[in-house]
Amino acid sequence: GASAVVSALAVSGLDTTLFTFEGFLSATKKHRIDRLKYISDFKQTLIFYEAPHKLIRTLEDMLEILGDRRISLCHELTKIHESVMLTTVSKALEYYRDITVKGEFVLVVEGKTEEEETQISIEEAVEMVNNLIAEGIKRTEACKIVALKTGFHKSELYK
Image (cartoon, helix red, strand yellow):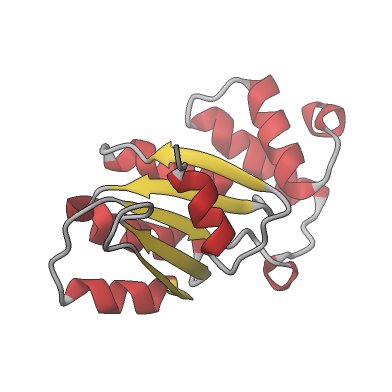
């Protein structure tokens, strides 16, 4: 049968070269925010499932953590009343705040773009590692996460 993830990616209007499918974000705010922070620097397209009653909250968190990226909101895909809207997170939030929707969404979010990239120093990268360690993440995992985000080598950060 049809797959909502692949269908959403295909019709999204966003880059289809590489993508990460996240499924449903956690209903717990802390876990949701932590996951969005973790993937905020991913350059590949991000794909999420979302229920209609949690859509506004998710868009608010995405705007806060990911910024005002392009997003394709695919509603009721593979069904008779499907719709797709390519916009920005802020405009989607503005639009959906005023209406009540039923049915599931697939949210396809643009990955981090070159314009968002900033050069950071090794000291700033090490500070990111220390912040993750302070949040309870093991040192090796923290180094791995920051290495993915910054381009520094994991061993360089560990030292």
